[in-house]
Image 1: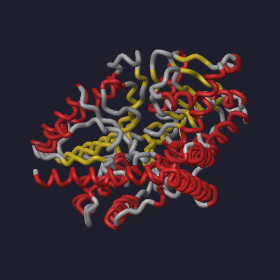
Image 2: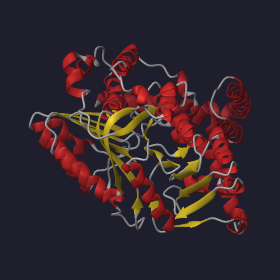
Image 3: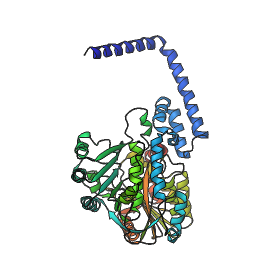
Length: 505
């Protein structure tokens, strides 16, 4: 008690000294601070122009903010705006992650030369091979997806690896958690990873029974201090489940009742997930465990997974089916934007059509140039975006690109105004596709850890995506030039400001 009283007195004394200084020299301090912040604004702008490698949109947005709102802008820049590639990692994080990647990429892929040509190009670009011997199922919307996830989790006999950006503490989340608890108590290995910001509402009380049952639980880059807040804008947006190393799930759905259309905000939550059984599960496992050893941050944390027994246990899926699948993942610390560039490769490969579904359509300069050029070449480009948004800036930012896409010859569609489309899909020529966690926006391209599964050769899974897209078109309305002319000045202002700010948010 005496120590606390001393602390309070000390704090009051410091506050008193600061108050006296401000009263006596406030005018001088005001000018000094003003000049200091202007100089900092110039230094930051210089770094952005000549040193930083981010896109032009992002540079312009940050420069505008630090000059228009110098105090808040500079604080925000140092917390959220610094180049992610300057972040320092521990030796354990670097070495153990490399162990996982080098070992799994070194596994024999003798059938690689039989792969589709585009898949081989993607392999050159990303060093991630396409794999044959898969059965790929498309899961449309929440009820089907969660039913399939629950069924497969209950079948687990060895291990369950689960990673989500958003994991709520509602009915469906509790069902999944309780299965994990039951499995952990029975001796099955359970590793659960959730994003430290996306799942900020996930309480210790909700997770405690899972930890007590023997499961390992980690938050990805939680925000503990202002210094660590520099990672607040760099989130792990992946959704991955791997069961016994044989079955995997990924796609657009997080875990919460809204993904089952069980909230009042939207009539229908339209989403797409994917179930993979076969060799490509190995790459889902790799993506999960690379993040896992990063979080563990311990020397030799990868050894358990890449030993002879570990490779047999975690990385030995049995072939199942004849589908080619290529799991490509990446994040903000990569020198090259592998997920974005793979998506652009797919689009540029189009001969007849490019169909895109994305809840947030805010491309960077290069992506916008590619998709517009494809449309101007006469390719049938159709893009479905929400008719009602879940976040104001993202919704208005997406709408800012409608007119320039129409001018290029693309068809832009708004999904049902009472519902929300959250699927992340690209379909090319009705024969190739990508489905996964990445939106067609700057955040997914440059700031988030993302994952996309590329599908080839007119498979049943691609046919399913085509069927769903055609239904989504029926449930959408097409934008016209007349719609653009009817926009109010306020609406145009919202869209232009949102598109300007979206690269940094």
